[in-house]
Length: 440
Image 1: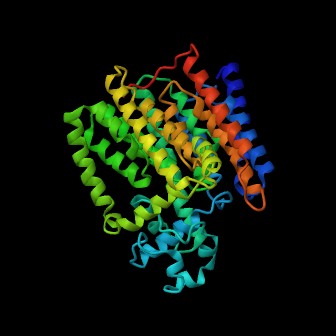
Image 2 (image 1 turned 135 degrees about the vertical axis):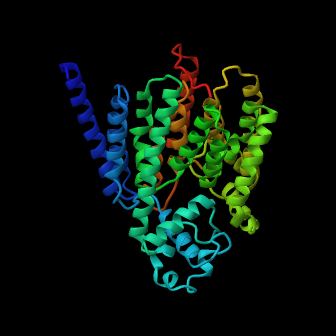
Image 3 (image 1 turned 90 degrees about the vertical axis):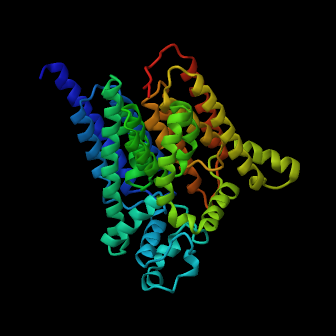
């Protein structure tokens, strides 16, 4: 090894230690209200990240470093999210032979021994008065974790985290393979492998956007390789983890053409029908929960907040019940416009259009949590855009909201976040540099 390579390795190790230390402290020390600690740790991690992604990386280095930083976070209890309580509740309920889609937690607190004695699950749950909205693949994971963990909170948590770690390893591998298939520098994979928000929100706070991304990217890779059945199955699993990929279906029609898309979607429909059967037999409850999501929940929104303000000016009260569904319709309209544009686009960069679609969705959503940007980070690697990297940092400032007692949202930070992102998107569009896109 020559001196230049030795120096590069030393720099990599130093920066990696900074990243590891910052993310480790973020996972084990603060609570949601410790904003200054959270943003300081995130900032240190992102500074290290900025320099780490400038290096060239081998496949072994990417996977080894990417796995090590995630393994360190395995024992950490989710300190910035309370979703785990619903995970274990749903898992325990399934093991009792019950359908989690038709039972409110508040209705069965004394029916089972674990429900009556595990007061922590119910008292810490963020929405016990709502039916679960987690799709069937998540429910299988919850049940599996409850089975292996014997319903105990920390043991079940560890099972889920091990599955998420394996998912992350697979995601990095798929990204590397897509880059290799398209003769692109595999070092681009470092953008996902070392992203602080991706690592913390998946491996500490246990969000499943990374698993959704895994199967979505696997579906794209199989599509490029003309392996239709594996592609369909991967896409169906992605939807079974999170419903978000449903928005990409019109784009797939434009990419495949009418004849191929008919065959593709027949198989996809069958796979989803089988997978979502527990929901379909009780669909009113699931739709009710989704309806509440669009008509009641709000966090870190952009265009919606402007509409909300106008609603107060003209009507004197919050118009979310109307604005939520209306903005969802606008998002669908944008995706249909993108579909038409993709149909006429000779480059056929499907990941780029996926990036456009999910960005539009987030700009028009009523709720945008930090982990919602994880798919953006993964997709931007396959495009020429880099605004998701800045977004993944800026959105961490939303943790300031939890530092107020009582809870309130700091709209100055929200405005700063979105105005900055819009400016960066503009620079991304007009800059002369053109990174090669993946043509799938």
